[in-house]
Length: 354
Ligand code: 5AD
Ligand code: FES
Image (cartoon, rainbow, N blue to C red; front, side):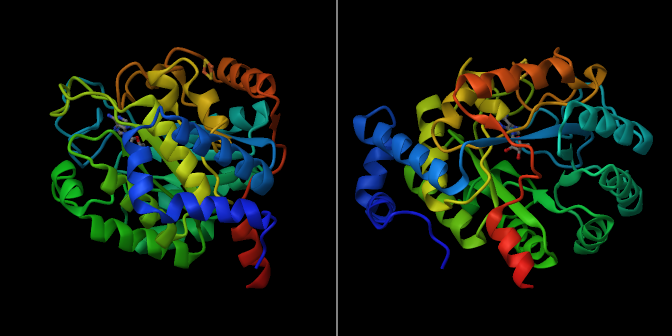
């Protein structure tokens, strides 16, 4: 098996991940020296496995309509206090073109679960964006597997859909009418179709336990996730969870680090949610195992309406501003901005052997 990690590093990783009692202690004390050691280890593993490059993905939030009613989410169906918008295919492609001009190699199309878009409409957008020489990542939630298939044929190569929490009971409470089992099934189908698959979870959800967070890591491993998004839960005042407390910065960073140890080759973003709870949240994540940043490309007129959680950073900044801002931050950390497509290396090896 391909493994550039030194044996002693592999032994250290295993000693962290396999001692459950110790792992629970570390999760309960995310500011302890032991937890700090895990962040350092993850930073080393990141450097050895995926190098110094940070991959930029241009995020286009194409629609804030959502048929679901997730208890934590600001664009949930029952939130009537925001203006709903939908970008046309032409608008989406033009925005992707702006991204290409800024140097992005990947465009992420994200939305609430919006059945307005037929599979064909989005396939058209995917084909046009792919024709610009860009990689398309989709983050459109649960759809029929036939849609996933059509979009893969149209050129999309990555799909992001977090499992949100690996505790099935908590999942059910947070997602009325949905099930963890179905989500996992769809993630497996996406992988079978050939996508690089991204999952992930929120940290600090009401009633979430350290054991749940360990289950989150175990599920990522079982899925063999190519990409892993982890962010703190941020209470949105216009949702049923609005009065709950926010996820902890140190604990979220620790979970990013543990995700790096669990899946050494994964693409792991320093999430916008982390940047939104702390001015250096994304930089800290980049030094705790993360190697991706997803600057916002959504036309500014729509941005404030894609409010998954309050105080989201970059809501009033232009795409050009954010691209420059994040590039500077990356170089200040002694890192480099990737110039390649930034595919998951393990996925590329799978493609070559297929
Ligand atoms: N706080 C933090 N993250 C949130 N998301 C949605 N709502 C919130 C919130 N209130 C995350 C979910 C989703 C991703 C796009 O945004 O994990 O998968
Ligand atoms: Fe948007 Fe810094 S990345 S302002």
